[in-house]
Length: 293
Length: 318
Image (cartoon, rainbow over all chains, first blue to last red; front, side, top):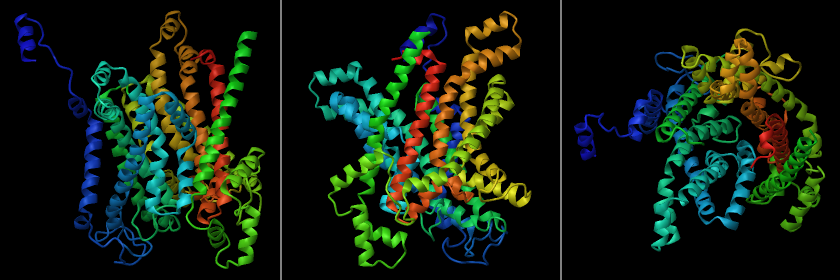
C-alpha cells in the first residue's frame, strides 16, 4: 500500500484511496451505531439485572396495581410486584430467547444449505424442495404446530421459533455457496486434494458468513417479537416468569385501571427489536448494500 | 392475443400443479410433528379437552373413533385420503367436525384480514409515495422512522394501546367482541398499521427506482402534467412489486390473525387454534393449521397470477 501511495503522490495525482473498510462504513451510519449501543445497553441490563433491579422480580413488595411512583418507577403489577424490576429481569428471558432460538435455527439451517449448495444434484433437489415447502408456509403456523406438539413453555418457544427459521438460513447459505463454489480459490483447494469437509468449512463457509451474520442479527429481533407473542397467547413463558409478552397479557385484563402493566413491557420489546433491526440493517449496508435477505 | 392467453392458461395450470406437492409436504410435516407427542395422545387429549375424569370407556371410545390403535402408517394414509376430500377430522372438545368449526369462524377472520388489508394499503401507499417524492426530506425521514417502529412493534401491544386510547379514553369503539362494524375498526387497524409500514417502505424504494426511468423523463419532456406522470406512469409501474407484497401480507394476516383475535376477543380461526392448543385438542390444531396453510398458499397463487397478468415478462420467464 505504501509504495502505491507514494507512487501516486510523485505523479502529482490524488493519493490512491482504499475503499473504506466494513467497520468504517458501519461506524459512519448513525442508525447502525445507535442500534449497537441500544442493544449493548440491553445486554448490560440483562447481565447486571440483579444489581440494577431495586426489588425481587417475583416477590410482592407493595400494594397491587399501584401507578408509577418514585419508589416504583413503572408501578406495580396485579400481585404487587415491582414492574420496573420485572422489566429489567425480563431482558434476560428475551435476549436468551433471541440468542438460543437463532442458534437453534442457524446451525441446522447452515448445515442444510451448505450441503445442498456444495453437493448439488439429488441432495440439493431434495433439500431445496423441503425448504421451499417450509418457506411457502407462514412461520407463525410452524411455530404453533411445534408448540402444540411439545406443550407451552419458554424452552419450547425457543425450539419452535428456531425451527421455524431453519428454512431461511438454508436458502440463504445455499445461495451463497452456489456463488462461492464457482470462485477459483475453491477450485484450487479441490485440485490440491483438500477433503470436501475441509473445503466446505475453511473456504466456502468462512466466506459466506456476512449474510448469515446479518440474518442472525435481524432474526434476534424477530425471534423476540414472535416469542413474546406466543407468551402473550399463553403458549410460552408461564407465570411467575417475568417475560415481557406474558406481562403484557397479565395487564390486559386491567388495562383500563392499570395501563402501566401492559405498556412498559411492550415498550421494552419495541426498543430491543428496533435495536436489533437497526444493527442488522446497518451491518447489511456495511458489508454490501446490495445484499439480499 | 391468443398466444398470450394460451401462455397465461398454461402458467396458471402450472402454478396450480406446483401447489399439490407443497400441500402434501406441509400436511405431512404437520402430521409428523403432531404425532411426535410424548405419551398417549388420547389420554392427553381427554385430560386437556374434557378436563379431569378420564374413564377407560371414554378412552377406548376415543381411540376407536380416531383410529389411534392402528399403525402410524395406516393413520397417515387415512389422514391424507380424508384431507384430500376436505375432511379434517373431528374436534375432541367440541365433538364436531373440524371443517364445521372452521366454517363458522372463518368469516370473522376473513373480514378482519380484508379490512386490515384495506387499511394497510390506504395508509402505506400514500406514505411511501410522499416519502419517495420528497426523498431525503424531513417528511421522508419521519415516514421511514414510523414504518420502522411499526415493523418492530409487538402486534398485541399496538392493539392494547389502541384499546386504551380509543375505547377507554375516547369511548369511540368497543374494546372487544364481534357484533357490528364498530368492533372491527380497532382490530383491523392493528394489523393494518403493522403491514402499512412494510408497504410504505417498499412503495418508497420501488417508486424511487421507477422515477429514475427514461419513460418518466419522456413523460415530463413531452409536457404531461406532473400528476399524470406520477399517477399514470409512476405509480402504475411502481405497484408491480408492491402487489406481491400486499398479497403476502394478506396471506400473513389470515394466518397470523391469532394474536389480534386474542387481544380483541374475536371468535376467529386464529383464536380457535390457540384455544385448541391450550386444550390439547390435537385434531382441531392439525385441521386449523392445514386449513390456514391452504388459504395462505391459495392467496399467494392468486397473487402470482395477478403478477403474471400485470407483467407479461413473468409468464415467459426463466
